Length: 235
Image 1 (spheres, helix red, strand yellow):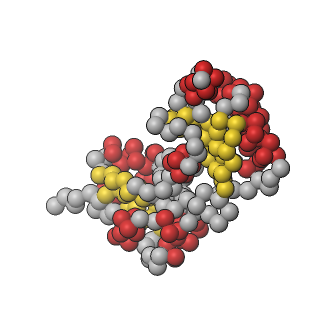
Image 2: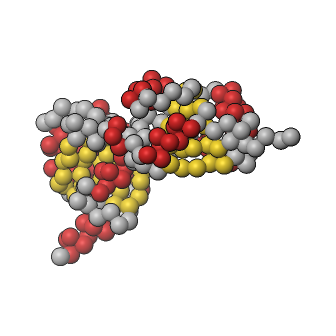
C-alpha cells in the first residue's frame, strides 16, 4: 500500500519581535514532524519561546545534496516538514528555493503560511509611493557590479526596495546618490525591534544622516522610482 506524501509548509517567522508570529504559523510548527531551518540555533530560540518541541534539521543554500534528499524522503514517507529561515518569509532573499522546486517536481504539496516580510514592513512606513514597486533584494557585493546594477535601474519608474547590511550602507548610498540623484527614500533599520528607526528624506540627506550614526542592524532601503522625481520636477 502506497503511503500518501506529507506536506511542505513554508512558515514565515518574526523578523525581530517574537510577538509577530501568527496563530497558523504556530499551528504548523507544532504539527510538523520535522522543522527544517536556515540556522538551528536561531530557530531553537523561537521554538523555545513558544514551547515547541519538534526535531530540527538545518537546510540552506550551502547544504549538501544529501540533506535535501533526506528531507524529500521524509516528505515522501508521509511526514510533514515546516521550513523556516532566520526571520521573515522563506525564499525572499533567503534560502529554500531548491527545496520547494524539488518537492514540487516530486508531486509533494507545498503550502505557504504568510506572515512577516521586512520588505513590506519597510515599504509601507517609508512615505514613498508603494502602489507599484520592484524588489531588488541585496545588490551585488563588488562595487563595480553594484554600480552596473544601479545604472540599469536608473530609468525604473516603480519604487525600488533593497536590502543592505550595516557595513555596506554608506558605499551603497554614495553610489545611489551619484546615479539616482536627489530622489526621496527611506532607510529602515532594526525593524520591529527595540531600536527600530527610519531615516527619511532625499538620498543625499539620508547619506549625511547615516554618516553620523552607529551602523547597526539589517537595513531595508526604499528609493522612489524615476517617475516620482520627474513628476515632482514638473509640478
